[in-house]
Amino acid sequence: MLISSQFDGGNIECLDSSDPANILLTIRADNQSDFYQWFYFRAANVKDLDCRYLVTNAAGAAYTRGWEGYQAVASYDREFWFRVETSYDGENLVIEHNSSEDQVYFAYFAPYSMERHADLLAFAQTSERCQAETLGLTLDGQTMDCLRFGESESGRKVVWIVARQHPGETMAEWWMEGLVNRLVDHSDPVVNAILDKAVIYLVPNMNPDGSRRGHLRTNAAGSNLNREWDKPSVEKSPEVLCVLEKIKQTGLDFGLDVHGDEALPYNFIAGTEGIPGWNHERQQQLELYKMTLANINPDFQVENGYPPNSGGNANMTYCSNSLAEHFGALVMTLEMPFKDATATPDRIQGWSPERCGRLAHSCLDALHLCWEQVVN
Image (cartoon, helix red, strand yellow):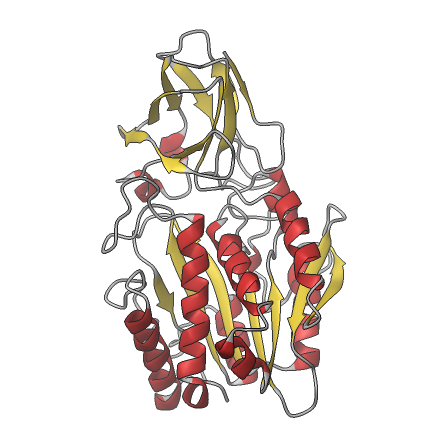
């Protein structure tokens, strides 16, 4: 048996694989950080073996509540990811599996590699309605990529959507892929209606370095990018710096920041209730968008999520809070689960890349339906 993770986004260290019933593993922490929880590895020469993989440092992970009721994903072809028997004993995360193939991949959630990211950009830019832009470079020298859909003419509304500030939240880029696939469709009446009056900017991956390195939450410097929006710097957060400079050039009338939540088994939206400029109008806009989305897609719900901040207590280093206050616009954080969506469970895949893409479609439909009320 061989355990490996030396590939794009991989993360695991093998302590002992001599006994298939007691394979000892640890997750590597993010560089210059104590954060860890993301894992992605391959087990080879395991066909027809009853294997028991123990992640021995699970109790020190960033969000131990994320292990409760959680099932890891596995794949033979790295396209279709299915859930496997997983438990947490308070110390170890235990994955049990008998593979039908010689090689099997395991991950915290379906991985979204930087190669797939490059393919997404290349595909998108072949559409005549899409313009690919490079905004800058990361600390590791990767490009910060932005896709613009629609014409950036004077008078048009401006929509900004960013995703995967936390690299281990790969569901965010699966969501982005679903959105791109819809935006390039010239026959889609909803897309056409929105692009008749707006330009949409997408940053499919805010954290390329963390993504390639197999980080959970930070970039190459150990910075949590969703705590850098008040004072981004070249040294700590060039990713935020270049994106924010572009947003200031274009303006912003509506925004989404797409994430994943380790512990909560729901799709939900967090608003910016605690910012200084929050008011009754913003509250109505937030509630309207959330209810519209919930009515469109049963995978989304409004009953469970983060408790709103009280007035004036918002953390202004967050992306959504910072942008909402600066531009006086409705900006929201969309959260998706690492587990399954409790109200609409899928026994085989749980929350999956395919469902992420469908939720992205629904988010666009919701924007169309309540456009006049929520876009300034």
